[in-house]
Length: 304
Image (tube, rainbow, N blue to C red; front, side, top):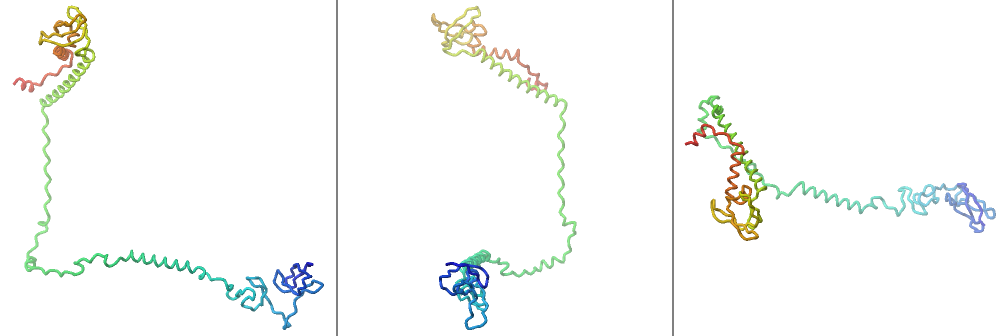
């Protein structure tokens, strides 16, 4: 059966099978060995063997089992109290030896590359200039130069270069006379009037082309004569010249010829190009803007 026993050294209790017949048992708390009395289950310190005094003990930091106080190596796990390591433990250097070797190779490669870039080969360096490699001795002055030094020096004023004189400003252009001013003004007014008259003529021709466009061949028309007669039909062609020019018109009863001089103003403007141009010039002269008179000098030139 299991009974509660108390460790003689650490005073901690633990379970013990009293029927096991084991006379000694290690305390699970401190690792010290206790002797069990038969029948009572009481513990006490084991009797010393061959020595009346008990050797002091200490727990092993690695396996927590009791060992003699003055030992260097643990008899249970081999822990070294001097180096504080177990036999299987590796030092930091030994554990990281591979990484340290790799880091060393990388540092060597970087140093070699920096040396190559900072110190190029001698073959790549440019050759030294000849003037620096072999200095040329200075030439001795000629005797003539030595004789020239005996001549008196020129005055300092002679060595100074003369400053270039400023170019004179061109004379201002002559002012125009009153007659020239008047002629220029008249010329400008005439140019403005001509431009205005040309614009008026373009507007007149545009209005006439819109309101009374010329008839085209095979176009239906309605002719009005000065005597009031009206002829309707289709324009076929023209015949004759000058005042005898006739317009041919196809009517339902047959083709007829109507002299242009017999037509009224509106019908003749659309059939007679010469009459149309004369009408435009008449309006320009009578209703268009007038041009200013020529200046006297220009009029005299025109008379010549």
